Each structure stands twice: as C-alpha cells, then as structure tokens.
Length: 211
Length: 211
DNA sequence: CAGTAATGTGAGCCAAGTGCTCACATTTCG
DNA sequence: CGAAATGTGAGCACTTGGCTCACATTACTG
Picture (cartoon, rainbow over the protein chains, first blue to last red):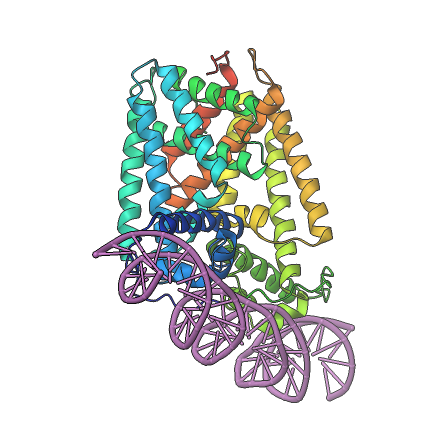
C-alpha cells in the first residue's frame, strides 16, 4: 500500500518523562533503522517496527504521529551519528594515519549497527519539508567534513581536491556498503584494505590520460 | 501491496515473432529497470511499468506471467550488460590504462541508463530458485572478472590481492552509485578522479599500521 | 497506599491500491 | 481476405498497512 503521507509530521506526539518511555523510543528507533535497511521504505510497516522493537503498535503511535515522522526521527539520529564520526576523525590531533583509521573505523561501526539503513534513509525514504532541510544541512556538513579531512593531506596535482575528496568519501562508503551486504564488515582484512586504499589515494596522484 | 508471489515464474508466456512485439518487450524491460531504480521493488507496480513503457497492462502480461518473472528478466539483462563491460575491459589488448578506462567508462554508462536499478536488482528484489542461481552465477563471474582485471596489475605487497581487487571494485561501484544519486555521472572531472583513484590503488600499496 | 499521571496494549476498521484476467480491437502477414 | 499475432484497459477480487481507541498496567507523589 502507498497510503497517503499526512502533512502533520510534528516532531513527537508526547514528551517522554520516565526512563521507561525513553527506552521504548530508543528501541523503536533501532527497530526502524533495521527494518528500513532490510526492507526498504515502502515495505517497512509500522506494525513490523513495533513488533521488532518489542512494543505494541499503540506505543509507537504514542510518540510518533505517523510513519513519516518515525522515519524522520530515525534519519536525524543517523545523521548525528555520522557527523559525530567525522568530527572525531577530523579532530584527532595525532597523525594523519590516525585520522584515516578513525574515519574508516567509524564508518564501519555505524554500518555494523544498521547495515543498510543509511542508503534507505538517504535516498529512498520520502521527506517532508523539515526533513528536506535537515537532509540538506547534513549533506553540506558532511561534505565539508570530508573535504576538511582529506584535502589537507593531499599531495600532488589532483585536478580538483574538492572533487577528489568527495570521490574518496564515496569510495569508502561504497566499500563499506558492499561489505555490509556480504556481511563481512568485521573482517580485519577488509579494514586494512580500506585504510590502504585511502592512503594510496591521498599519497599518490598523477594525471591520467583521458580518452 | 505485497501480494503473494506465485510459483509459476516461467520465463516467458509467449514468444515474440514480429519486430513489433520485440520492441514492446524491450520497452517493458527498460521501464521496469527505471521504475525499480526509482521506487524500489515493493513500490514498483506492474501497472506503472506498463504505463511508463507506453503499452497497456495487458501487453505486459502477454509476455511476463507475473511481476516476479518481469523482474527476473530485467535482472538477467542487467547482468549481461555488466559482464559485457567487464569482458570488454579485460580483453582490451592495449595498455593497462586502457583497460581501466574501459572499465570505468563502462560502469558509468550502465548507470547512466538505469541510475539505481543495479542496487534494487542485486539486493532488494526477491528471487525465485532460478533467479537465485542466476544471481550466484553472476556474482562469481563478476568477482572473477574484477580479480582478473585488477590483480594482474598490482605491484607491491597487498596483503591479499583478491580482497584488494574486490575492495577496489566496490569502491568504483560506490563512487558511480553516489554520482548517479547526485546526477553528475556525466561530469568529466568525476571520470578523471575515478580513473586516478583506480590508478593510485593499483600503483601504490604499502603496509599500514593497524590500530 | 490511595489517587493520578504516565505508559503500554492489540484487535480491528477502512481506505487504498495492486496483481492480474478477459473479452474485445487492431495490426501484420502469407 | 482470413488467420495469427499483437495490443487494449476497465475492473474484479483480494491483500494490506496505517492508524485509532477503549482499556490495562506501571510509576510517581503526597
């Protein structure tokens, strides 16, 4: 079913006051992230989310006015996690290698918790106006973060360090995503290769003959 | 709607004899690839596919017994295209650079035609037994192709060239996928950076201190 | 420990489609 | 021309999922 997406996507229907309800909300958001990743937006049902969270459907609707509001909340939390990874990596005052490792490990961790949620949240799930704004803000911040993390350390003559940084970020994301699909995110070899890939790209750059 | 997936996923309900019907089938497959990419499996409706293909729903069911058979056919065609890209790249008798360029360009081309179909076809859409077999065959062939394309040209001490090759393939796919999302697949700068990324990874490999 | 507020429950309504059929029109070809 | 191939689309029969609401349970508070 498509079911219309109601305009009323107010943040939260009721403010949690006890620890119990806060735990419920966390469980619901976790479940939502998982099911979104597993099934995609349109196959995600609020009933399934509630069941996976171990709460009744009524409890879900106590805090989220509708399906869209639920996914918006999930999205916000996910964005926060990603930006936190980027901040941690960028702020690392130690070596360049440390920053790279922090970035790669952070990306792997996030995707280990919710293997495919990222993609669905970013591309597939619909957004209301507020969600679109959140999304734009995130994209900007994320891009800036990646550029800060990578361009500073690029030697050589990359034609455009901005683009190079974004390409590199997308490459890392692609590898992590593929690894999540194959369920080998925990593999140390993968981690090593990913770090090596980033190192290689940052260290060596040279003009390549375009066709 | 989920609607049960019937067991009868016989290949094709009727064999096309005239050019007209062959064109119809192509149009349907193109439309299916597009809509699958845009909406994902469960939001893809046979009615929408028919409409986008510019044919009536009846015509669609003349050739494909059900929704699953349609997606299986789309998948088979997509796999063939990808393997063709890999073959072309691997078989290039000219320089290593040429093979890399051929691979990158091929990937870009496929994703330009059907921006997000790949992901849905590969991960999201359900499969019947035959589809699962096709899929396994493809994964094997594809991996072998990537390994053949990359490992031969790797100098240096990659811990495991197999894994390195797969990581690199996933990286390229990730970048192309992200570019498709941002609708900048046509950008020459992107192409250059992608080629440079592959070159960098193949040329320089060194041990990196793990955490 | 009452009394009240907070939280949790889940059967089920109902509107929204969707997969798919079939009786019929149109086109192609020998 | 006549038969085979192809194309049409209204609509049936059914599944389904978002969401409500009347009620139970648990936690705070004085």
